Image (cartoon, rainbow, N blue to C red; front, side, top):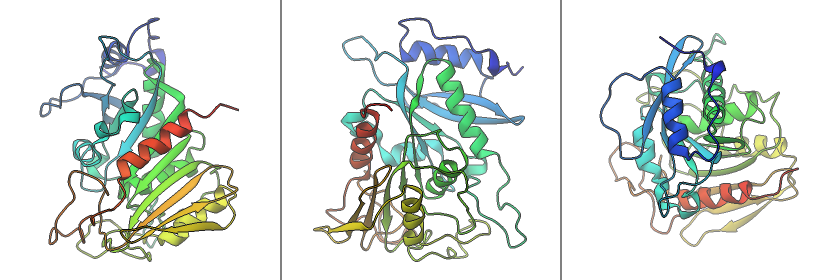
Length: 323
């Protein structure tokens, strides 16, 4: 029987994140049996609009026998279309990022391995009909309600379609996250950001991405992405810059090819990395990819490490003094 999440039990004073996670697991409906998870990772299930939704939750490891005191800054990472939470966890390998060692890391599962990122069919209907913004709101509320996540220090990151879902969430759930990172994802051409407000964003895009074309448009037919074209990376960046009230950007050429673009006088920081001759990849991942796997050119030598840069970006946001 699904329990009422509105009556969550508060976290006991001094309890560590794993104790709070154990309490959350008791308060949530049990997930269906699945393959064994990596050590230290738990699966939780929520009911959102009557539908079961799941996420992997990874509290920080205890140091010297003492877990970090919660509630914790929390990174929520969304997988690409066709991926799973476990796959994006392996791809990003967040455990490599020392600044995130005391953070809660959460990996939601998209229904049928995709997200309702805001794509529209030619008749104007949603290409994917799932309440994914509501799911992310409910996930944050559940984690915060058990004292695991600090609701004032939530950041979102996404790869591919997960990155596009992050952009939609920034528009439709303003204030849910204090910052976001998007890797190989762009703005759905049909997405309008009427409710959005300034938020810090870090982006990474490869110029040879076959699934999220740098110049925008439809992905190849073999990529089953549903209806709806994607905006170009330039339009995605300009839309975010307008949202953040930024002035003209400054560019820095990268030694390995590409560009780092930094916007100034923004209400919230914004940085975009353009990586030449890279396909649909997570730069810096242990899984660099290979030619011929259908994802475009592999990560070039000397490319920036997205995981390390995302960690530094998010930690700097979390450490800024509040208003």
